[in-house]
Image 1 (cartoon, rainbow, N blue to C red):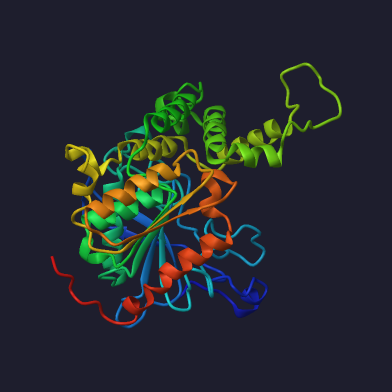
Image 2 (image 1 turned 90 degrees about the vertical axis):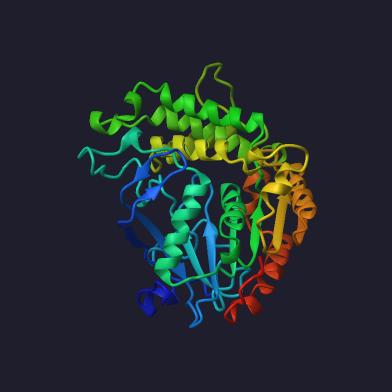
Length: 399
């Protein structure tokens, strides 16, 4: 059943919205063995659902979130909510992920700070908050936990698993770990592994957090402190990489906040004001230890690491059985189109069906979150092709 409240409240929301939604919590007592060698004895996953699961359980779509994302991908939490879910432009009635046909599941990943078990949670072994003791999690760990949630929801096979950025990495992991449980995979504004430059950006962000005097080696909660300055700097650095030079130029240029220069180190340019605002907002809503964990998960993802040679990535993708859509954006210099083409080439070498498009957009990496007619058309067509697979019980794929 869809998450919804009163019809009166819903009538005030846009007609193409999934409406009012309420997060749910799934608790798991079965231990989860992690790639780092440690084990979570028990954990919670917070998630939202949109649409209705059909009788066959075959119309489910899993949405995987990016670094600072969470379970709230679409809809609104209350009638006066001014900020819908982070992918609201693409999930809802008549949208590419059409909730009139699909049952959409969106999960806050382990290690997150929006309700799923993570550094802010209680550690049953010590009686204190997990804090920096929370084990390092990987994309593979997230996928295993998501598969357990699917079992809980009665979903044997997703019609599609979709995601952008770090979410796209999870799509790839799904196709390799659970090839029989994914009908289609959409990998958007992602990469099969981070470049040295991307790892460097992540390390600068982590050092900004860890060097904050209020970090206290990750035990800031016990000191009634928050490393806001470090989080703010980390977000400012990250946000610069999410935008393109053209987008920043057209939005801010060299515009001043006032008519005169003050010849000091305060905020004088509009772009400075914007970045400080983004940093302040983020530092008030995101957990520092979670940020460290998420960036490490990005750094560690490299499915080709176990193989050698030019076709290493193709070898890693050999288990996949689903058709793929790979999308990149022309001005995305964080995960540029060349990295998407690298993935496409590997899928072709692995003899996997794949469609690829590079969307002309001035908005940099953030373009995957924003409305765009060509993006919506291509993504929507791919999801439409998932509909026949979603309307009947899928046949067992051949190995």
